[in-house]
Image: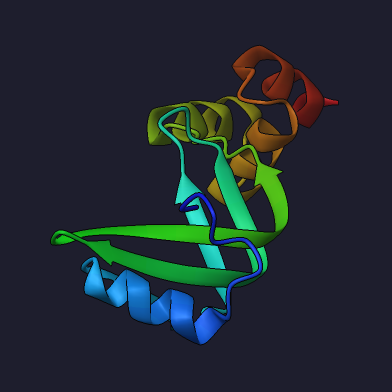
Length: 113
């Protein structure tokens, strides 16, 4: 925020920002998804999204209800191994591997019971 602009009329503030080369655009977004390098996902539901363009650079300000989800990627080789070892479908093997957080031995043991 620019110092001394608290309480300023929003139209005057937008005009001043435009003179400074700063442009704000509201974006009508339904959901914002951020995929992290560790495989987890941050979702912002019913977000308020503002695009800020300044000196040719675009940035986004996002606010809303935030949820974090851990995404577990199971390698196909693990699914095949569990499926063959426990004599179950690949779908059932994948489901069980997800339940056991990728633990092959635990998945096979669970399916063999």
